[in-house]
Amino acid sequence: MSEKHAPLEISDAVDFYRRWPQLRQNAEHLLEARTMTEEDAEVLRWMIKVVDMVGPHDIGREQEI
Image 1 (cartoon, rainbow, N blue to C red):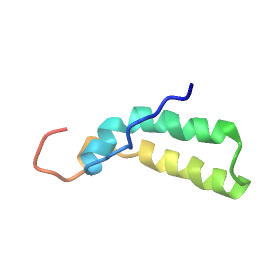
Image 2: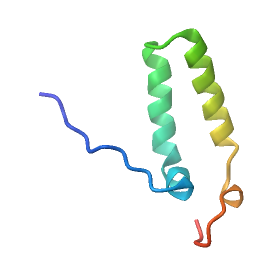
Image 3: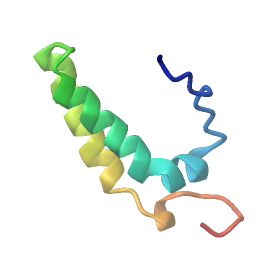
Image 4: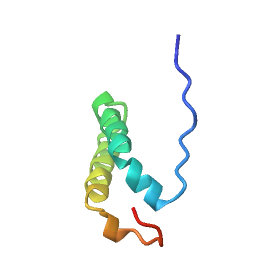
């Protein structure tokens, strides 16, 4: 029996930043599955590296992270 997941809804950059640890795991699983071209995998690896460089000081919003 397959599980049905609720659609992922990310409200803004702060929400994405807060969820990044889980989202990063999702991206790593995509790489491990080897279901994409090597070019797409390289893009995804770089996307992970870039997002890993983002910190709370990089995201502008009045609320604290």
